[in-house]
Structure formats: structure tokens, C-alpha cells
Length: 469
Ligand code: SAH
Picture 1 (cartoon, rainbow, N blue to C red):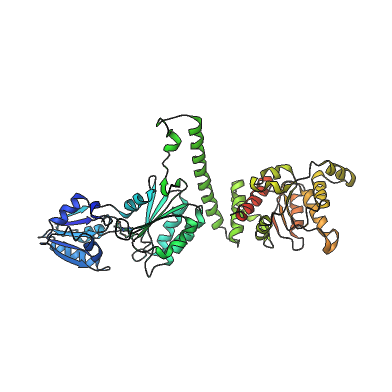
Picture 2 (spheres, rainbow, N blue to C red):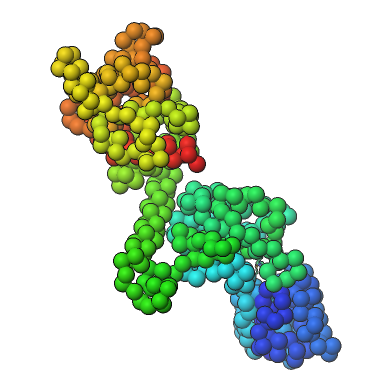
């Protein structure tokens, strides 16, 4: 008889009673040196111990099947023998041999590591091994991409060994692409063994821990529902949306509901972001990473990937925009609605003069539209030169900006960055081409008649978000 026994993570009080019984009554115990060492106090003196090396698993399984015909053989695996362990191989080798075989489950690294971290896998989760010794890396990478796009916790086994280091770096890159960089990540090394280390960090800070990650380490990448609560990693299951923790009752109180909406809202937001990142990552154009983030926001705001074909980034406008925001430069908008949409954290620095009495005067006197007059007034106040202009609605505001820039030749008034997304069938496309053809002013433009306030706001808010990170 063969028993394929999972011995748990290491500590003997986490060995199941059944596993202990099988080991205690075994004639022969087979396993690699590390596992034999962990259970040495349970191994009876009468048992023969056969130590196997890594890479000799097939040989060991065959030997076990042969001996199992007339002896009680225990094949040990760490954790659970059926999870990246010997169980599957033993069944394959034993098939048709007539040898009796049983699998004894154990506590797997995902469970023991999760318990040390808190409760990070208390909602749906997935498990993936980064070992490409038996599985081609391309296949693992494909799975990682699929998992990264899903808003569930992911437990990573076999993250890194002496010879396999890029796999973890690639995995990190994939998750950074599809998940929020602040996602909570737990790292457990030597769970329930000597030298146990537990860390809770974020996705973006994971590389700082690479030097402490090895083949005895399990990493748990959280999802949008995962929090760091008092140094414990917890993935919320949704109780918080249904129950009042104070009373324990299934409450309908508005505040619980509101909390639930916030949580549900976060999930929707995370999922949307992952979908958009996926769309943008597949776009064949050559956008920089920051341009991709800005483009993603436009796709998101319009729920329309076709904007990727219309967006033009000229003269490194995102970098320029980030610099402007960091330096606290003014943003001038063509209409109030664009101003109102700009991130609260920067709105104090946003001006719009479309409704200023002086703009009315200029408009009448010069025969301009009110939005164009608003831009002219901003120029008179010295707010265009070297600042950011965001035009989300009015083609005439684009025209005015072009006129100001060329007014006095090289001495013309030039913004540091123009975001131009006016919308409409009259003049919008033409005026945006004019902005694009204008000297070397950094600009972000949505070509053609489409665009509007949501796109303008999406672009400038993405830039503010990157600058404030
Ligand atoms: N059958 C085992 C897994 C074997 S794969 C189980 O169910 O746990 C080996 C990987 O498991 C390691 O690279 C590591 O990622 C994880 N692992 C196993 N024991 C661990 C421990 N004590 N602490 C942390 N991770 C462990």
C-alpha cells in the first residue's frame, strides 16, 4: 500500500492525525531530505527511510509502487501532496500496477501563509506556480495575464530560486500593468518553520523584497477588496455591505448601504481600469507608459476604444504637463464645465474667463465668441504664456490660441501645453488640425469632430494624477 502524505508547512502540530498515523506505521518512508528532516520526530525507528533528490521524483514514485506491492510505503510531500506535490505522479505511475494507493491531504502553503498574514484569501482566489521547469513560461505568462485582469487574490508558489529570478520580475510587471499599484501584497517565507518571516507591502513596493524571496516563500497578491488592517492582510467578503458590525444584525441602515456602495464602487472602478489597461496594452501604436495611462482615461471616460485612433500626443506633452502640475502652473479652460470637471486637488489653480464681464466686452468689441474672448482675457492677464490651456468645447478657443501663438512671430504667447478636444461638426476638426500644425508647442489632441468635455477632463486629470503620485 502506498500513502502519499502531505505533511503541512513544517510545524508538527499542523501535521494531520491521519498523516501522523500513516508515518508512524510505515515500513518505508520516501521523500526529499527537507521533508524527512521536518518529520524526523514522528518517524518510527523501525522504518526504512529513503531520501530522494529533487529531479528524481519519477524514479522515487516507481520505486514506491514496486515496494508498495508488499510493504506500507509513505511518500511524503510538503504542504498538500496534491498541490504541486507527488500525488498526481504517484497515481500515474501506479496505474495498472495493482498497488493500493491513498492520498492523505495536508495544509498547503496557501492556507498556512494566509493564516500568518491574516485572511487574504477569504474570497475567490487563484493559485499559480512560477516554476517553468515542467510548464513552458509562455503558458504561465498567459495564465498570469488572465489572473491579473481578474479582481481576485492570487497566491504565487515557487516564486524564485537561485537560477529562476526573471519569472518573479515578469510576474510583477504583468500585475503592475493590470492592477492598481497600491494593491496589498503579502509575503511569507518559511511559514510555520524556523526562520519564518511575514511582510505586508504593496504591489509597487514588492521589488524591494526580492532579495528575501526564495523557494520557501509564498506571495499573496490581493485584489481591490484586500486591505491592510492593523498589519493584517484581509480580503473582505462583503459582510461589511450586509451587516452592521456594531449590532451584528443584518442591517439596512443607510450608512451600511453607503459603505457597501463604496466597496462595490471600488470593485467596479478596479475592474474597469483593468479592462481599459488591457485594451490600451493591445493597441499597436507606440505610446509611452504615461501616454498609455492618459489614453486609457479617455477610453474609460467614453467607454470607447476607438479614441485610441484619434488621440495625438505631440512633443512629449504628458511629461510637459506633469512638469507644469508639479510647478503649480495655472490651467486655463475654455468653459466652466471643463473647469468643474478638473480634479479637486488642483482646481484652485484653474481659471476660466468665459463668463467674466470683461470677456463680454472683448467679445463685442472684437467680434469674437465669448470663449475666444475668455482666452484673450486670460492672455491679457498673463495667464497663457508658459501655462496649460485645456479646451474641451469651443473650436473658436483653439483658433484664438493659434492666433496668439503666431501673433508676434517668435515672441507670440505660447502655452506650455495645449489639450484640445473640442467637439462638433462645425470647425472642430479643422481647428484641432491647426493646433497640431503649430510649431513645437506640446499638445494632446483628439482628431476629427469627436471629443468634448469628458475627454478634456480625462486627459488633464490623468496628468494631475500621475504628477501627484
Ligand atoms: N505541496 C506544497 C507546495 C509545493 S511547491 C504545498 O501544498 O504547500 C513549493 C512551493 O510551496 C514553494 O516554492 C513555496 O512557494 C511554497 N511553500 C511550501 N512550503 C512553504 C512554507 N513553509 N512557507 C512558505 N511557502 C511555502
